[in-house]
Length: 561
Ligand SMILES: Nc1ncnc2c1ncn2[C@@H]1O[C@H](COP(=O)(O)OP(=O)(O)OP(=O)(O)O)[C@@H](O)[C@H]1O
Image (cartoon, rainbow, N blue to C red; front, top):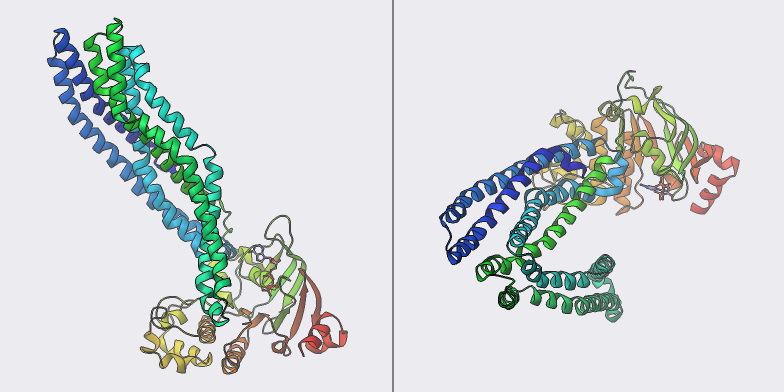
């Protein structure tokens, strides 16, 4: 387990202390048993009492040391992992983050690192105790009387046999359980989301059916499993009960004594220790379960840490900021080795021009535009700004040159002011207001309860179109010479659409713009239109050129009109 390596030394020391504590925990019981044997055989017993009492502080000290060591190790591990994950995730391609979503990052950085706490600080130590205590007790009992030890262990062995029968095919069952739970979750969410629609159309019965079916499947699975698991588990609990152990020890002990195979004095250790073996032995199962959960969390963290990071540009070749000329040179790209999403893309965006990318859904428009901001790196070829490969430009420098206004608008849970100056935190309020005015959002902001200082997200929500204009204001303020614009596919209303178009017009002035156009009506004025189909450029030219060519663009245009 990769993440545990950093604290291995302290963990091993903690395990050694816990083993000492476990031995010191068994010692008083052995001392009591030995005192009993000595008293019955008329031998010296004081030493056993002294050893039994001396074991107590040893146990307290080593237990404290073990817990302290593992908690310190856990603390350092969590800090180390969280720093490492934060550092690594910040170097991962933006595309990885948007595909995996913040959920996966939160799972690794928060939940999985938290789950390791249990593994590092507790589960390992619990397992050590669960193993050392019964082993030490058994070794001692063997020295007293091997035959009687075997008989004492019979109920324990039977219990494990029943338990392993109950757990047979547990992996298959767990997979079925997850499947049934997932279906139930999905059906519940659909059911709740669909209530309004279902009711509107008077189809209440139908809407319930899927949910009812999922609940029935889940219920049947749980009762089948319980039916299969419960009898062997109950049998195992019965045979491992301390009372059963006591009966076995007394009966076997009496029989062996009568047969001359066990002295009455030697029965004492079995009465003291033999009846308490099942508790710690049962804990082994629980500890192993905890270890498995911790291991799964560690594996997920390792997977995130093993995701290849983007190579950070060295900045060896300085890139003049403006004007910016962008070149896609023989670019090939695939999200995986099997499928190529973009092939042989050669494209130049001249400074101060607008290039519109059009094409059917899935043609690769967003992928191509994303390469400019290193959402992913090209598989072959290069993307250059003013002659310098984007992979050689340090990311902070790159994002001073390339700005994005994407469809998937993300506003932070902070003030409107800070949202607008996200990319340029040093900007003063006057500059922010200027950008907001140009983005046609100033009036809406001043109408908010605290104007520019209104915190977005809790009680105040902007409409999709308004949020988009806040992003345009942000891009205006960032003032990057290159801009990637993912045109919104849907607008709340015609007024909002007109305002967004005006704001975009302001934004495009003097910049090198690449616009992912979803509606042809908005690309007419573009300096260059690029038709992408199936990852290759089919046509390019101005609106008039392409209409005259009477190809794919011309037929798309005819369909739209
Ligand atoms: N993160 C990803 N991982 C794997 N495949 C992806 C990923 N993103 C997109 N694809 C695939 O790459 C191809 C191009 O997708 P892309 O989103 O670039 O097309 P698009 O032209 O922008 O489509 P749309 O107009 O619907 O947004 C599609 O086949 C898509 O399924």
